[in-house]
Picture 1 (cartoon, helix red, strand yellow):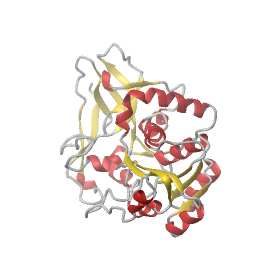
Picture 2: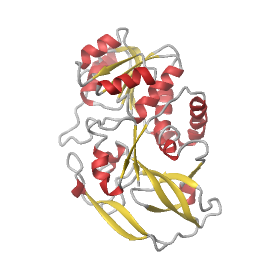
Picture 3: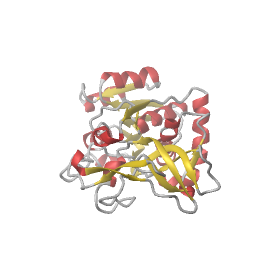
Length: 333
């Protein structure tokens, strides 16, 4: 292709909050696709808290982005050239395409999506990795049962908002922790949560005692730190704590803050388990089918916060860590 390709590459490993200087924006030609490869014109890029961890050197559930490489990202776009018979020009796909305008990808690493059934952004949210994380996190790791009391941190975010709605569909009482009156009102009035705790305007310990007087059977944690510590004081007997993320800790320059209230796990015979969505890859279809049905029935709502400009990727990414996004944060290229 003669079209130039703008790419965002990792230039330095961030210390604390990522800065613009940690990235390099380059422009160059789009390489020709090899056998079994396609060229995708990227339209939307998923901005996720996990991206911060991918920038760090060291052992994790996935290898770090190497310095000089295109920043890793899940994205969605349109096939503009194909050397794979399974894909035709004009097909819409999702995959790990990176922060760039055009991506050369192996066909076997892509998923074809139908934009007549749902907008392309939905395949980066409810019907994408975000939705899969929520579905398997609450159902499999959280072992959700009808009638239980469920607490969610980061509840107005991409994953948390879906977790809460799934719990309501399953007949549970649901309380969310979020920052700001607008987000808390959204949880209750739009998504059907039973109550919400605003960590910006009330003491979280007192708020949880008010909203969860009977305690919590499942705590789905996206935040970590002080919020996790407070939630541990509300556990019921045989409660489950799902560690999905710890966004409050990702930009720490010191060691992450661990929970001092962990003895609650012993007293209540509770368990705390981490979850990574890739462990359930062979069951994504099962989850997508059920959630698509809930969406069609009006039981599962979703909200995307779309920002624009690939050249502004660093500042857009930081919205996640400052609580500035409302719903799933997506970058329109």
